[in-house]
Image 1 (cartoon, helix red, strand yellow):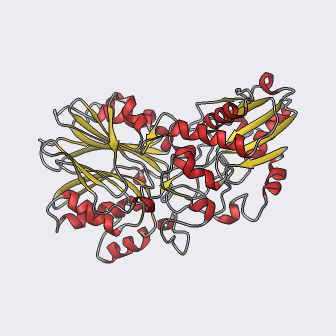
Image 2 (cartoon, one colour):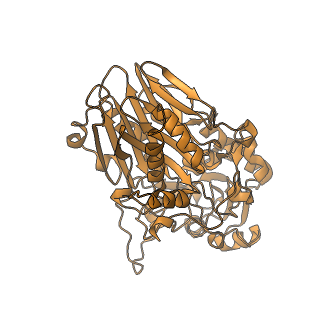
Image 3 (tube, one colour):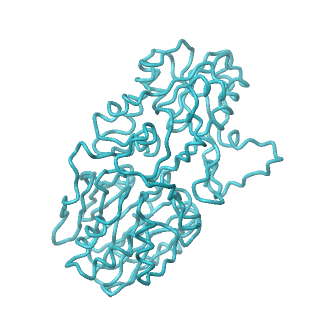
Length: 487
């Protein structure tokens, strides 16, 4: 989908600019007391809806029932559109996994919705995956040449097949997950349901987040801590980069760190903190809200400007704008009213129609900005096509000056690890100076967060800065592999 919520024609084609998208959110639960988990997974996915609005699904199983019987339901749309009382109530099971999806690799179709459920010799596997593999094409070809038949065009199915294949020669499902994880390269947070175990895995670099929670006698795996808060679970800890955790009534949480890298080689996606994650989440011990406040403070220190009001472009620009205000002493205010109902069902008007999709999503509070010098904080500029419209909207509402500050550095390189930052030629910062970009978006001044500030922003955690510097934590693919299964 593009950032207006429309289904895209092809993967990796986005319109507009606030259009950074993450791939997915995952959620798993195992209730050792035998209670049904489907409705709790529903609320967990609801809390992770910001990570993907294209499709969603839930798969559950009864650990004491017939081995391999999985009940699953998935569909295109938002969690509350896809699931109703009628299709949730019959989903009985004390173990389950759920998923919300935004496509980076693989088209927007129901077949590509997750969790994937695989029936094979050893029983049934259900898998939910967040991330992007860079060697999915070669792994898929190997599988196809040995007779594998694929139902989807997503790299997650490649992972599921490899786990199933490795399970035939392994003593346990977690050993099979570990072996499969040795073969796949790229970004992944996985939640796997086997007939009697819930397994979570995080890639060795820790690109994508995954945490563990507990409520009464049930254990939870989730992409973000906000999902634990929503269901009233306590946060236990994060799954570590390179860790595989196995959750069972007999063993509790068992950990395998054989894939872990030295701490300094870890490379979390910095965009979790800048944009993707909900501000009330904590990732690897760092508050997302606090990191956004810090980014705003750094902008005020490094790119100061005299003005009357600091405003954020909702939602992720708001905390950074507050940080800028706190540091600079310039009042913080609200300039934009956001329409919260622009979901994926929003119909794009024909080109001839004059309604701007930006205006449908955002409107300016004229009284707040009229006659004032405004500092506008946004999280990123990808193509620049939205920024110029927002600047113009502020001017049309009477702002005398508009100074734009961006709480990330300029994008200069594509991402291969699950963030849909496009080809270099489509990036406004590619081959342009900051002054060039300032003119294009029509701002009075423009400042970006310095690359050197990123580690500071997240308390010294090791992060991936590939989209800003072109230096990736692992060798990137030689060609753009995103969405390749459709070609």
